[in-house]
Structure formats: structure tokens, C-alpha cells
Image (cartoon, rainbow, N blue to C red; front, side, top):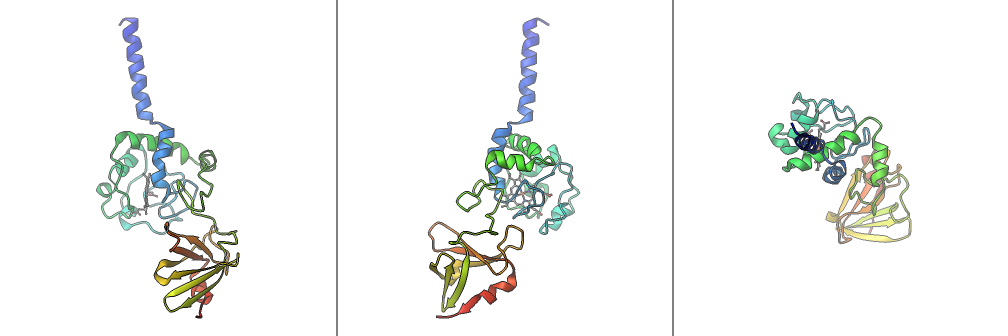
Length: 235
Ligand code: HEC
């Protein structure tokens, strides 16, 4: 083989290797669609299970996640490069009746990049570094944009800390620690709980806006028992 031919072969094989490796930075962008449901921190579960330490884990096997479908739990899958690529191509095809509300990623390159990112980011001990580097840990406007995290309600601002809730006919009036009172049509106020360490302290529910128009909000309590205790019927 001439030296030129040898060089071309070398370049070609490196290009293939690179393509297979996937682009971690691009993969991190692709991960944004997952981050609304999945965190990379161990046992920080949201809509979906934490993806920390995913490789070699049994599907449906994270003990701290309460909401796996029977289909995923009994699938017998072990997560690795190959099974994850198949899952992310078309979850419903791989595991019919699974509970992940996600249609899949059709572009092979997007999946390769995502998996390159995830493989690094889910290694034991990797999450804090990834979060810091990408600014993922931070609250963006109190929301979870680009997320991996829901807003922490332990230390809410005065404008978020609910001091009183009154219900009258079809309206809730929510008073916050900054002295303001907001009125909501009862169908537009959602009452939720967060019993995790990110949730509000007991007897100190928090209100966060939901939707764009300011007409909807969530009030989040530490436990279900608090909900009706906190709401007075008063006109
Ligand atoms: C709308 C929420 C949502 C989105 C978006 C989402 N997932 Fe999921 N994911 C879930 C839920 C819920 C489950 C549990 C499914 C079940 O039990 O059947 C899950 C399960 C998984 C699992 C199996 C984990 C385990 O412990 O067995 C993996 C891996 C996964 N998702 C990766 C991803 C990736 C990567 C993305 C982005 C491309 C993504 N998911 C997007 C909600 C979501």
C-alpha cells in the first residue's frame, strides 16, 4: 500500500470511530427534551426515574422510583449502548405498554450524540460536575427550562410563600407573604404536594405560576392533610 493510501485508510477509520463515539456537546443539547422528566442526580426522581448510573442497570430497577410500568419492570432488559439505542428509537415498539410519554428519536446521529453525553453524565459521581458545567442545577425563572430540576420550595421568596387561602363560591383568593392577594377561578388553581426535600416546609405552602397568562397557578403543600386544613371558606 502506498503511503497516501495508508494515510487515507487511517483518516477514514478515525472518521468512523468519531461518528460512532457521538458528539457529547451536541448530545447535551438533545438531552434537553429528556430533562423535563429525568434528572442525572442519583435518586432525584421526577416524572421519570433518575438516569444516574444507568448503564448496566436492570430496566425498571431503580428502587427509589415508585411509578414504573409492569411492562418495563418485567421486560428483562439491561441498559447498555445497544438496548438504549433501541429504546430511544421507539420506546413503544421495544416495550409495548411502557409508561414513558415520549415518541422516540428517529435520527441515528441524534441518538449517538445523546448516548455519548449520557454515558459520561450518568457515570457514578458525574452528576454534580455536569450540572455545574451546564448551569442545569440553577433555577431559570423559577421554572424547569432546560431543567433536570424542579424549583426548590424549601426557602420560597415572600411572593411565593402562601400565608392564607380563602375559597368563596367559584374563587380561590391566595395571600402571599409579601402581602398580595391573587384571585383564581377554582378550575385554574391546582393543589399539589411535594413531600421530597425540595418540597415546601410543613404548613408553609408555596405558589408558582403555571402557564403564560398569569391566570393559573399551582399551590404546593408538604402533605395532602394540609390542603383542606389550610383553605378557609370565607367570602
Ligand atoms: C414526558 C416525560 C419523559 C420524557 C420526555 C422522557 N422520559 Fe424517559 N421515562 C419516563 C417515564 C415515566 C419512564 C418510566 C417508564 C415505565 O415505567 O414504563 C421513563 C423511563 C426511561 C428509561 C428507563 C429507566 C429505567 O430505570 O429503567 C430510560 C433509559 C429513559 N426513560 C430515558 C429517556 C431519555 C434519554 C429521554 C430523552 C430522549 C427520555 N427518557 C424522555 C418519562 C420521560
